[in-house]
Length: 77
Image 1 (spheres, rainbow, N blue to C red):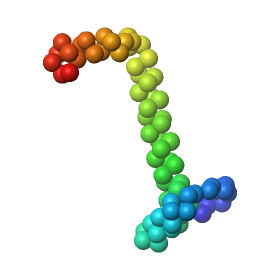
Image 2 (image 1 turned 30 degrees about the horizontal axis):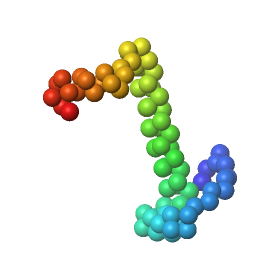
Image 3 (image 1 turned 120 degrees about the vertical axis):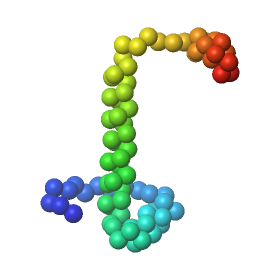
């Protein structure tokens, strides 16, 4: 771990903790590395989602009823 890391306490379900320990052993990585990678991926996905929302902010809203009508008209429902 680098000098710029922060310590935190995280509580896992016992089965989840056991699975993480096994994965750490099998991959020769620390449990912290595995958790950090997983959290980093989730945060990156969130950033991508927010960017997609931002790109579509000016698109017109479509009601659920209108969407169903369109799907039926196109033969997809």
